[in-house]
Length: 345
Image (cartoon, rainbow, N blue to C red):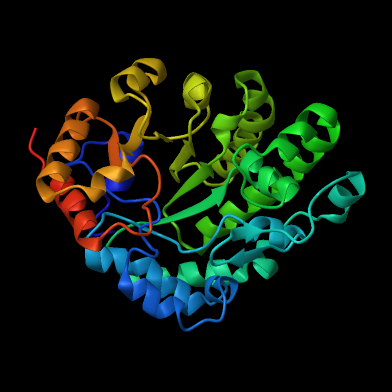
């Protein structure tokens, strides 16, 4: 039914007429249209929890940039809040938790999220977005990976090294596993609810994958991503899953063995080397350096063409190697999207 299903085809390894493209954080501050909607709300959480507004900004990049997919506008920290640990969002400070997880009692006080109630504003936003999109392009759902969510719940806010969260892995591994297990259960039912509401493909973000040693990331990171992926695939086997684990260079082989369809790459991962590591039965996504978009139109076109050449046409979804930065000009984003869509190999 979709007029443009390129991303779904590419994710599944089917033939495509051209490389599809979307951008992480494409629904956000880079757009004046987004800021106009955001300014109607006193704080970020009110904005996120308003389904109509969330749907409006979800669809904006499709109308403005002509990308090949929309991604639902939300936040990864809605999951811990649905588990009983509310977060706050300060404009200059970013996300933070007034209460953090310190002991077993704190973990026991949490509950597995119930999306039909505590996250209904997200599934409602998905339904509104599907209606506005009118089958033009797929809608992407998403959630944070358990380790990244754990890091915020224990640390309390963003950090350069998340030493408090990492210390807990060493000093209280059983407590850490119990918390990660509860996060994974919550995330699995949340993503299942997103699919039931209408999303066509999902992405799991592990923004802080790269700060853990390899063996520790397998134990406390990948094992819980696997738990989510297996639960989602058991219920929705035909819905593609993207996993994006920033800086997880040493874990690419292990990640590619999960029951996923697409492996997201940051801008420091070499496409040829990554393809050699993961094989040909998985789609790669990425991975232009976001800072390229500060350059001229010609520079953006050249770097984008070089990226596309390095990936090849087989099983590739074009994207940045991380999210858009808020001061990137909208016209530069259009140049990137057009360079991908006009590329001739």
